[in-house]
Image: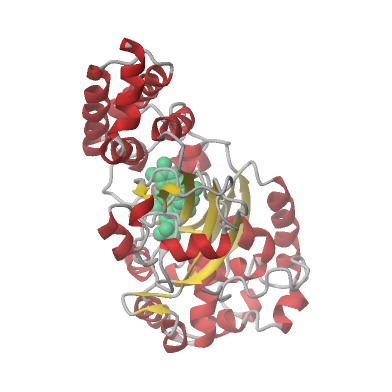
Length: 419
Ligand SMILES: Cc1cc2nc3c(=O)[nH]c(=O)nc-3n(C[C@H](O)[C@H](O)[C@H](O)COP(=O)(O)O)c2cc1C
């Protein structure tokens, strides 16, 4: 199993602030093409490429752009989501710092296609170096005629604002991010209406993950057919997988979608488990994805195969847990994080996340009861079913999956009390 460097091929090969280095390596070809092409045929190309969002939900990018482009009433906005708050996920930073001009090229094309006159890149407050770099990049881009009025001599004008995130997990969620940009409390909202209809300041807005956007110049520069040679028929292209947990080597690896199995990926790149033990469980799609048992890692790295195995590809943040670990301990770590991240707007998530965190904590202290296990299941299922946004719909999933796959880890904690 080998890496396929489609999006990361320039990372480490040029000074990220040096536009000439980017141009010398094929940069801006896609933008120049886009500016002389109608937005409808660009949307059609993105549709045919099969590109879907890399931010977690997997929404088709061409369809999202078409919805915003169809809105007649401007102003419209484009937001590049570089909040990267999900646990076990650190792939966006590679693009943010390693090939920022490619990301900017993607942002400009997206803004052009939907007719946005203002764009934003919303960067995690933890990525201080990235924020500094992007502030300089925006100045450089303005000097080079890539931002402001009449980009590259065309009639298209757009600006880009670099925004530092608020240090909250929830601001990665698109509506919470939008509220935060509006200087309001970051909170999820019921959909519809979607941001493409009523987004930033109530205007049509597209929010895309940074990895999604990095695909755009690749697709338009080389053509859809060339792009579709990577990956599989239903899911073309590559994905950036973050690998962490109980492994000897953590890292980010770009792989063709479907190029091997989850087990092969971990074997190839992890350097083995931290203590040389077998694998007990894996979360393949970031901290809110369901655990897969170590015996079920034969699924190929596609959305469909991972779903059939019982989890989600999500943010492609693969977290490995060794034999000997209790899954109660694993979900305790997860709940300690999510337990203080609800925006508080909807009751199931606001109350449920704290209740579940406290029960898991009680069980970990050896003070839990059998009723606690049932409560965990009930509260978890309710949150998944009725929460307003993806936060409440997703945080219980690893807990529910651990309870189903490894009930003994939880029961053993109770037994310990009564013994
Ligand atoms: C709680 C929560 C946190 C999220 N965090 C991020 C994030 O850090 N980065 C991101 O790109 N998307 C994140 N998302 C997904 C966004 O809401 C949105 O779907 C995504 O940015 C759309 O881009 P895409 O279509 O290119 O994937 C999050 C969603 C939820 C529910």
